[in-house]
Image (cartoon, rainbow, N blue to C red; front, side, top):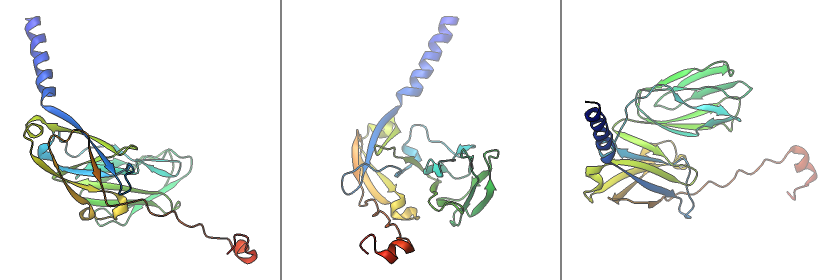
Length: 223
């Protein structure tokens, strides 16, 4: 009886893992450099284990930055905004998909926000202008965020990966603006097997530091 039970468990585990095929996509900019924080949106029907709305997705605040900078969640998910800095932060968004405001709070609080409409939500902090983050809320699609090397690993269901069919991805990055429709539609033929995607984007030019009044007056920087 015990042997039969053990064999059944092994068969269940094998059947659960055998139908998933993990494949890797790397996102590059138009100069061929890896792109971090790109969101690859794909139809949930081709995935091995698509997930729905989640509770307690974490977007932390560390060293005056949102961590992660870009998050991809499903419609109806709840995000927790802890504050790991030793200073207060004020989190807000004017985005149509989810306008909200979390007034100044410290590391003792963990406010929550539920994102109930699809779209891109841009996060900011009234106290620290350089704090900018993005939440991509999906419905029929599911999003995967590229890592520092520009890579995303996706588990496709076995039926899709073996059919040699073409699949369409939408790839979005904050450099494209705050509209998901600005993302590039890209068609790839299965199996993907470590494919590269090149986007028609590049990092924005670094901001020029404003010279102080004293520097301008004495022309110390050659102005």
